[in-house]
Image (cartoon, rainbow, N blue to C red; front, side, top):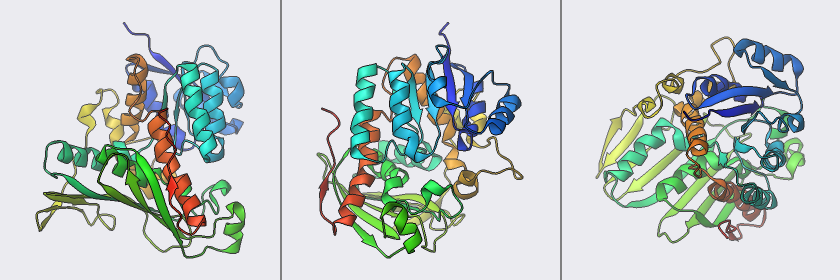
Length: 367
């Protein structure tokens, strides 16, 4: 019998969603959690009967009984905590984005190679039911040749923790970038980005980014396909949406434009509404129920569920891929090179926007 992967979770806001998934997974054991606020730490740990409890990340990763760490902490901490955990000999899963600078992306890629441990960026959209549905349409030939891809993520971030305030839109772009690059089967090569509109001086002062919206055109490596990405975070009136559209030779999938209006598949010139199925059947039965339910309820909701509808049932798929990659001794689907490329698209896109739309090459992390 394979020894279970002993997992620890850092960050218990959104991270709490993964607690029961790891506890139920047949190949995993949740042995510890980490949260800076001690009351929150014990509240969650007591509720789920978790033995290991830490308020300090550095102390937790020294625990020899932990094999893998799933990081769900604030964006500014992702790179440093990922590198520290890898150097401590832990496999690492980290919520998006991988990092906030190109230098941090390079450092994580190097740390993965030096440690020999797995790294996976836990990008939700490429495990959402919509993505899995469209990937099947692509694989079975329904779409024909993919001709063009478009991704968008519009979200008003007022009310979120302070580190979000004034964040450059493209610095949190992986929800829009990942599905188009995944469906194209390619990594990004270069990007040109336009910054549009202006946010308040108070928000601009936080990161020096003035733009309300950033929109980018991406070229892909060894591919004739082009992609377009649009992103907004503040002071732009729009219902929340994470979406992608795939223009195919034979059929085009178009994400619903408003919540509940329905996705559309254009076959030739004929549009038809489509029902996207759940993909729980692809998971072990122990964790399959978590595609449609989570920790939070109507009285105690997390903003990712209020605005994001539970990320399309992706959470158990992500945890399963991470755990199985460790058990099988292989790289996870969203490994360090893929994560660095997807994250760098946004970083380089913002650099382009700040320089009047200058073309910026995406670094090659495969070397």
